[in-house]
Length: 291
Image 1 (cartoon, helix red, strand yellow):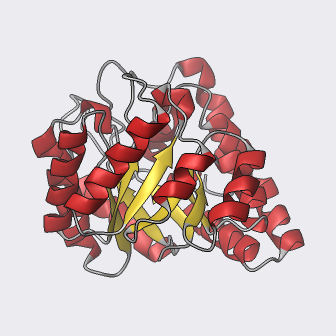
Image 2: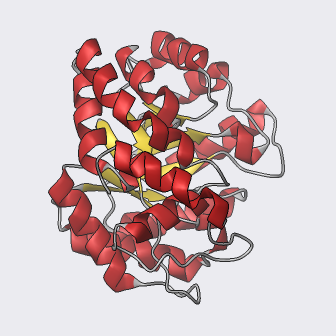
């Protein structure tokens, strides 16, 4: 259903951490104009962990309103409680999203059967396309290919964002599930190779800062134009690395503020980017041609 460069959009905040809806509207317009293929609203990069449920759905709702059908909107609705994930997914559907992205339940470390039952329950409860999200480095659980294979048989589970930092995992998922699920890279540094290997796109942090270049790279990679894709990706590689010098979304929120699109506010326990990393991020932005 979705392909290409899908931005994991930052949630703009004022200096005091309050939501900045005017800046959110600017960001959506920026991505429409830049050719971004879809927006994930309130995912990990959108600071879902520090937004309360009302704010969470408010940001998704506003993103859909500003997008006006010009760009697909995917609501981040995962939670470590199955009932909460179900409620958020229903709320996002009512807000008008095109699909939902559900991260594996974090902290409580469910077994594979628990993961299967969690995603199956939400999929059966809310009739909207749903994308699985595996990021074991943050959640302390790993959604294994056998479980993904089982979940691929559920009609409205349409994709997986795989962020295990493993190209081998991407290859295995493509081999086993690509006829039933779209495979998306969740790691910008591996995204080009993942798409050349059969992935359908990337859910990207880098696209917040260099959306047009990410769109072009993803389009070339999905089309199988390896030389072109790799050449485009080479100019972005520094950004892929610099935007993870500190925990995401600390560097990317600072970088977006340097483009003049947001005030750069961020919520505790995260704090603004340490000053000794500023020049490294600026240099990566200059190399990518966005600063």
